[in-house]
Length: 309
Image 1 (cartoon, helix red, strand yellow):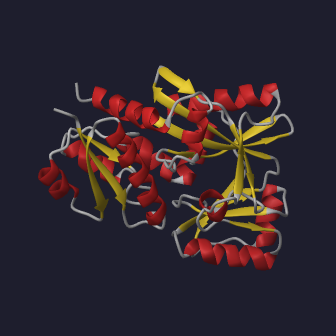
Image 2 (cartoon, one colour):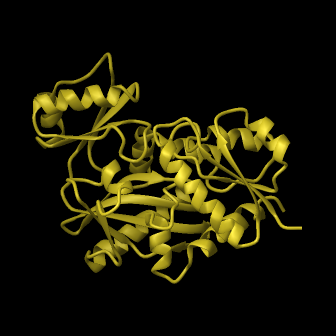
Image 3 (tube, rainbow, N blue to C red):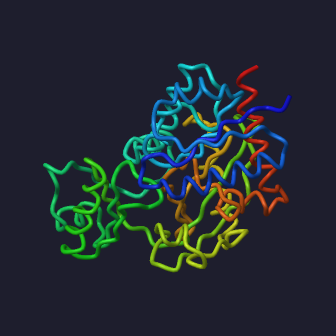
């Protein structure tokens, strides 16, 4: 009897539409590999869904809040059902950009300097730009993915507009020093210590940075493999990625976004459930090593099933 895989996608986050695309692509790939696939556009009541479908394993293709933040993972732990991707703790840690940045510092991984505040204690542009030593600032809601709600601000008006946009999505906002450089991403698959670093991808977005449109609209960005960075930057990026994978306790697969700048590398964030269509970054990196999309998805499911045995 073939392994029954419940694929969860959709959800209620701002990344719902992208999640549906990821889930559909994963489901198609698993069917080609001979799995018994049940697709589910997840909204809530995971216990009812699991009881109704009785899967051997759950492939979580949910992005953003309520899917990538440890919520669903915790429910599946209580139900004793194996699932793809990182644990409750690691998922929650990576979804929260502030906690991630504190952890980067703890494990000696460079990340852009930053300030953070809630809507009731915001700091003015002049103060933050002086504090961070840069008139160009990056404003981010603390718990959104796909660059949703992110603004690059070079003056007070743009700064205030960026804060307003970010606070529509989160009660806590991070303001970072803007680092100009080459946007790169490092994907890792496997489980520590048996992990494999895929080729580093250089991202060339149509806009100033790798925003939502650049990520998901056709022809809005280019993926260059291997990334056009120095040997030193490549080695440092891979070292940072492996250190994060180990110390954060990541599982199965993840993507770490970085900036390479003048022979230095800065880590921006960690994606525990990155986009998973055939043209997404992680599958692109795998393809560069002749790992097909179907084989990649199969590998991830098999890694998750190991935890059941």
